[in-house]
Image 1 (cartoon, rainbow, N blue to C red):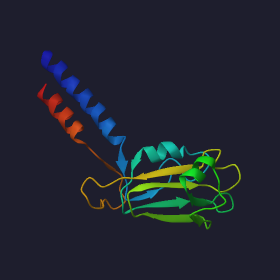
Image 2 (image 1 turned 45 degrees about the vertical axis):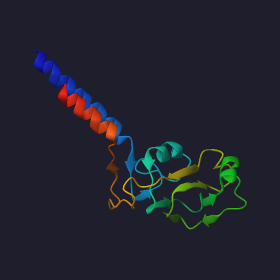
Image 3 (image 1 turned 120 degrees about the horizontal axis):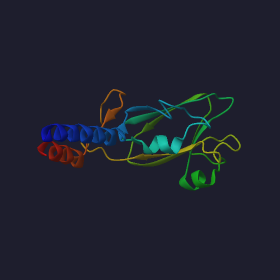
Image 4 (image 1 turned 180 degrees about the vertical axis):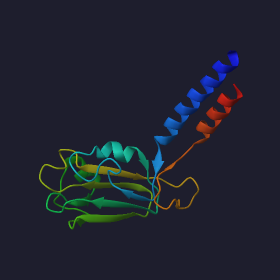
Length: 159
């Protein structure tokens, strides 16, 4: 009976660790808002960007109806104030492909009146690759497991 409880505990713990690991995803070709949304007013773009890890070499794809939206890359100040008058770059044709070439933070808003203030904006934090190079995962979302996850798994299995 004690062995069954131990096994059940280990299974529950492994499921919990897998859930935690899957909360951090990477993608080398990232469609903004996907898979559950897109570049629109309905998608929680802050949640989407915080649920992904971006590395130099990754690509963002903005897909949208150009009669209803656009994509403007802006400064942090313009992002914070939703100012669309002086963009760094503008994409207005229904799709925008952005190469994330370096570590740093990039800011994107929709320049249509009221859209940015309603939440159609996204901050992309590009971090250094843990391997020192650009990850190559062919556009497939993958799970990243840190040292803490591995140590936790080892401790549970030793239980």
